[in-house]
Image 1: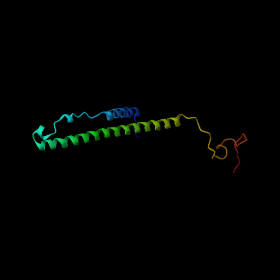
Image 2 (image 1 turned 45 degrees about the vertical axis):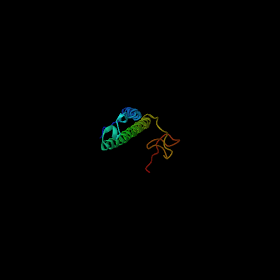
Image 3 (image 1 turned 90 degrees about the vertical axis):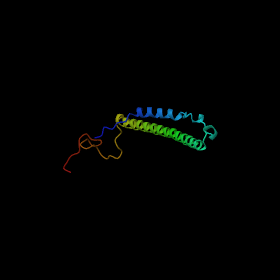
Image 4 (image 1 turned 180 degrees about the vertical axis):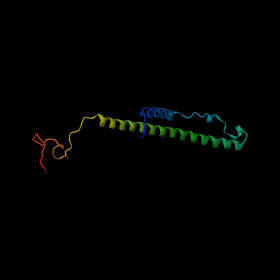
Length: 123
Protein backbone atom coordinates (compact mmCIF):
# COMPACT_ATOMS: atom_id res chain seq x y z
CA UNK A 1 0.00 0.00 0.00
CA UNK A 2 1.35 3.38 -0.99
CA UNK A 3 1.68 6.24 1.48
CA UNK A 4 1.78 8.86 -1.28
CA UNK A 5 0.64 12.23 0.04
CA UNK A 6 0.49 15.70 -1.45
CA UNK A 7 0.54 18.92 0.51
CA UNK A 8 -1.39 21.19 -1.86
CA UNK A 9 -0.33 24.27 0.12
CA UNK A 10 3.31 23.55 -0.76
CA UNK A 11 2.33 23.33 -4.44
CA UNK A 12 0.43 26.60 -4.13
CA UNK A 13 3.40 28.28 -2.44
CA UNK A 14 5.75 27.07 -5.18
CA UNK A 15 3.30 28.33 -7.80
CA UNK A 16 3.27 31.76 -6.13
CA UNK A 17 7.07 31.92 -6.15
CA UNK A 18 7.17 30.88 -9.81
CA UNK A 19 4.54 33.51 -10.65
CA UNK A 20 6.62 36.16 -8.92
CA UNK A 21 9.76 35.07 -10.76
CA UNK A 22 7.84 35.13 -14.02
CA UNK A 23 7.21 38.85 -13.58
CA UNK A 24 10.87 39.71 -13.22
CA UNK A 25 12.69 41.33 -16.04
CA UNK A 26 16.01 39.74 -16.83
CA UNK A 27 18.52 42.35 -15.80
CA UNK A 28 21.38 41.27 -17.99
CA UNK A 29 23.43 44.41 -18.25
CA UNK A 30 24.33 43.27 -21.76
CA UNK A 31 22.93 46.43 -23.27
CA UNK A 32 25.85 48.29 -21.71
CA UNK A 33 28.41 46.18 -23.53
CA UNK A 34 30.11 47.73 -26.52
CA UNK A 35 29.03 46.13 -29.77
CA UNK A 36 30.70 48.05 -32.56
CA UNK A 37 33.90 46.85 -34.19
CA UNK A 38 35.32 50.36 -33.76
CA UNK A 39 34.71 50.12 -30.00
CA UNK A 40 35.97 46.55 -29.70
CA UNK A 41 38.78 46.88 -32.17
CA UNK A 42 37.87 43.74 -34.11
CA UNK A 43 34.95 42.95 -36.43
CA UNK A 44 34.94 39.24 -35.56
CA UNK A 45 34.75 40.01 -31.86
CA UNK A 46 31.90 42.47 -32.46
CA UNK A 47 29.97 39.82 -34.43
CA UNK A 48 30.59 37.17 -31.78
CA UNK A 49 29.45 39.51 -29.01
CA UNK A 50 26.31 40.48 -30.97
CA UNK A 51 25.50 36.79 -31.50
CA UNK A 52 26.07 36.07 -27.81
CA UNK A 53 23.80 38.96 -26.74
CA UNK A 54 21.04 37.78 -29.06
CA UNK A 55 21.25 34.20 -27.83
CA UNK A 56 21.45 35.31 -24.20
CA UNK A 57 18.34 37.47 -24.50
CA UNK A 58 16.45 34.69 -26.29
CA UNK A 59 17.48 32.12 -23.66
CA UNK A 60 16.60 34.45 -20.79
CA UNK A 61 13.17 35.16 -22.29
CA UNK A 62 12.52 31.46 -22.79
CA UNK A 63 13.60 30.75 -19.22
CA UNK A 64 11.14 33.30 -17.86
CA UNK A 65 8.39 31.79 -20.03
CA UNK A 66 9.27 28.30 -18.75
CA UNK A 67 9.04 29.54 -15.15
CA UNK A 68 5.59 30.99 -15.91
CA UNK A 69 4.49 27.67 -17.41
CA UNK A 70 5.76 25.71 -14.40
CA UNK A 71 4.01 28.15 -12.07
CA UNK A 72 0.71 27.75 -13.91
CA UNK A 73 1.09 23.95 -13.83
CA UNK A 74 1.81 23.96 -10.10
CA UNK A 75 -1.18 26.21 -9.43
CA UNK A 76 -3.41 23.92 -11.49
CA UNK A 77 -2.15 20.83 -9.67
CA UNK A 78 -2.72 22.46 -6.27
CA UNK A 79 -6.25 23.46 -7.26
CA UNK A 80 -7.03 19.97 -8.55
CA UNK A 81 -5.69 18.28 -5.40
CA UNK A 82 -7.79 20.64 -3.28
CA UNK A 83 -10.88 19.98 -5.42
CA UNK A 84 -10.36 16.23 -5.17
CA UNK A 85 -9.73 16.41 -1.42
CA UNK A 86 -12.93 18.44 -0.94
CA UNK A 87 -14.93 15.99 -3.05
CA UNK A 88 -13.66 12.95 -1.16
CA UNK A 89 -14.09 14.73 2.16
CA UNK A 90 -17.71 15.59 1.39
CA UNK A 91 -18.39 11.96 0.49
CA UNK A 92 -17.02 10.85 3.84
CA UNK A 93 -18.97 13.40 5.88
CA UNK A 94 -22.20 13.61 3.88
CA UNK A 95 -25.38 12.33 5.49
CA UNK A 96 -26.61 8.95 4.25
CA UNK A 97 -28.53 9.04 1.02
CA UNK A 98 -32.09 7.95 0.55
CA UNK A 99 -32.43 4.28 -0.40
CA UNK A 100 -32.00 3.57 -4.07
CA UNK A 101 -35.22 3.76 -6.09
CA UNK A 102 -34.10 0.59 -7.86
CA UNK A 103 -34.41 -1.60 -4.79
CA UNK A 104 -37.55 -3.75 -4.90
CA UNK A 105 -39.08 -5.21 -1.78
CA UNK A 106 -38.12 -5.02 1.86
CA UNK A 107 -34.57 -5.28 3.12
CA UNK A 108 -33.46 -8.87 3.48
CA UNK A 109 -34.79 -10.29 6.72
CA UNK A 110 -36.86 -7.18 7.42
CA UNK A 111 -40.60 -6.72 7.57
CA UNK A 112 -42.62 -6.64 4.41
CA UNK A 113 -44.10 -3.31 3.42
CA UNK A 114 -47.24 -2.80 5.51
CA UNK A 115 -46.41 -5.87 7.66
CA UNK A 116 -44.58 -6.33 10.88
CA UNK A 117 -42.98 -9.72 10.55
CA UNK A 118 -40.65 -11.19 7.97
CA UNK A 119 -42.29 -13.29 5.35
CA UNK A 120 -41.55 -16.89 5.86
CA UNK A 121 -42.60 -20.19 4.59
CA UNK A 122 -40.74 -22.78 2.73
CA UNK A 123 -40.68 -21.05 -0.55
